Image (cartoon, rainbow, N blue to C red; front, side, top):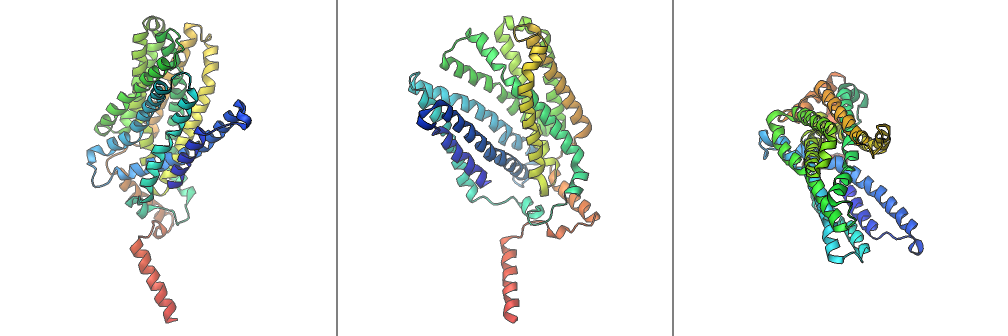
Amino acid sequence: MMTATGIVALFSGLSAASSGAHDSLGGMLAMLIACRFLLGIGVGAEYPCGSVAASEQSEGEAIAKNAQHRWFALATNCMIDVGFVVASFVPLVLYWIFGPNHLRAVWRISLGLGIIPALAVLVWRINMEEPERFRRDSMKNAKIPYWLIIKRYWVGLLAISTSWFLYDFIVYPFGLYSTTVVNNVTGGSDSLSVIFAWGIVINAFYLPGAVLGSFIIDAIGPKQTMIFGLVAQSIVGFIMSGLYAKLTEHIAAFAVVYGIFLSLGEVGPGNNLGLLASKSGPTAVRGQYYGIAAAVGKVGAFVGTWAFPPIIAAFGGDKTTRGNTGPFWIGSALALLSAAITFFFVKPLTADGMAREDEEFRAYLEAHGYDTSQMGIPSEATTAVDDVASADEKGSD
């Protein structure tokens, strides 16, 4: 995790310092693209590691059993949504400071400030110990029986990965609809301060769902909360589709309903996909389990971003009411599909469920002839005793 955080800090700085040969625009853009690619490697490594570590800590003795899932959601998805708002606010403040004649300073400092949280986390991680559950049940020093793991967990992993694909297929392209809201509200204003300010408002729509949804999770369970959020989001999406013409006549109403649509996405899959992915698998392969599901989700984001323009065109184009409502019909239908997949194929989670899953996983491996004594990471005390014993044996020889 320290390496991933260091990569994030390094390439945040390089992004801010990007420059093309002889100050060429093409060269600078090529450098920014390269830095963003490498930055994605760091974030992609940090994302699963941080999330699964948070999931393991959420079942610690200091956490009440009726709040385990809540704290995970608040520490992960809610913080991401807060980051969206902050990331929108920082360029606005820098724009206020430097003005329209010094935009180079605005974008370079906006990128460069990403170093600060990454370095802060890096310093924290240097002295961070592995969670107790990881030290006990890890396969870091053991041969991983992938075939046995696949046979036991493939249905749940496929279901969560598919739901994540559908969620990102919906949420990332729908983020593009914020431009429709902003253009209608501002009358197509090209003022950066107005555009930045409305970007903050749009990103703030996610926060109520993330915060309020986290308190629902422990009450009814992650699986049920996700289904509730997906079904509610689909209903709002269908309403927006049917009343699109009337809503766009009153853009404030459209913005509110659109905000509810985005917020319900956080109540359901936003809060619960990472939770289900990180707590459904055993500790031994939890990071890989989560990483696969998250990676499939990002493929959904890529596919959705490319698929939505043809979808809009097929419905009649972005100049028509039918063309603009097409994505809402499809997105709402996909939300219902995701809810059905979750209902039939995703296992519900309970308090202290990871501990029981690890026990059952060990029993499963032993029943299939796997030597579970090689699992775990020896403590420093155990390692020291082994070293002394080894030295004594050599001395006696």
